[in-house]
Amino acid sequence: MRLHLIYTGGTIGMVHNERGDLVPYDFADLLDRVPELGALGATFCTSVLEPLVDSSDFHPSDWTRLADLIWAEAPHADAFVVLHGTDTMAYTASALSFALLGLNLPVVLTGSQLPMGVPRSDARENLITAVEVARARDAHGKPVLREVAVYFEYTLYRGNRVYKQSSEDFNAFDSPNFPALASAGVKLVFAPSVEEGAARQAAAAQRRAEGAAPHTRFDPAVGWLPFYPGIDETFVHAVLNSGRKAVLLQTFGTGNVPSQQWLAEALREARERGIHLIQVSHCRKGGVGSSEYAAGRILQEVGVLSAGDTTLEAALVKAMWLLAQDLSADAFQTVFARNLAGERSEG
Ligand code: ASP
Image (cartoon, rainbow, N blue to C red; front, side, top):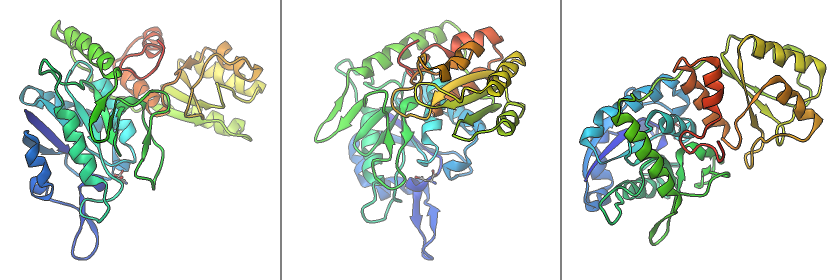
């Protein structure tokens, strides 16, 4: 069992130096710092994505570097664990879920709220169990997990379904629209949904074997327009005229926006200029549907795409991923509405 561990930065890989500052530790010492890993029956190989960064500094081009590294190492590895800062882990997990479609291997992202070496740190447990998840095999010796997942505080989540919900609890992530893939108590118990994820990966791997190349690039030309009481024309125009090819509209509830004529016109004009408008919700649970309210009709009339119950992190990343594939406008709209990597319930 060959496990490739990739360190990208973030709290989990930091220790206090003699001056009390948090600095990244020498990753080569990992097995010395966490000797329990040596007892897990895996051969470890490690990579560091230089330069190590706070995940707030991650750029879509870093998702590409990470995905390319994983594809390049895949022939020599049975599973991957990625150590990453928590702040933007949901974006990176979503990005990898698209860029690694068809990899068909476990890729588990984890991090921690407190640095390794601090008393009460969650780093050790998160790392050890992430490795346990990645090495889990079924009765036929195949990996139980074959998709991109996030492991945190005794729970394994589908990577493109999480968001960071807390900056202070150890339980930093939540996946309100999709149940956990596994829970870690005395035993590691996987949910039946891992099989659905594995089936999707097997189908994507088959398409790859027939010559479909993986897409690992992202076009960051996506904007984000949150609606709020008092939003005005100047602000909406500034976002819609900022040169983005797609804009996420973060709407109220099931997909409602102020029912004002200037807004309908601004959105219609943006659509006429070829900008893809994608609707997500301020609500983390549920998502956008076909709104029964007059306040939501505008969006349907204008031809706004619904992200359904996709998280806004995954919707943003999906738009960047599809834009980088130079699809026609119609194909973008059709493909965006599909469930490509388990990121939405319908479609
Ligand atoms: N700011 C850090 C990061 O996201 C926080 C963490 O690692 O939890 O890189």
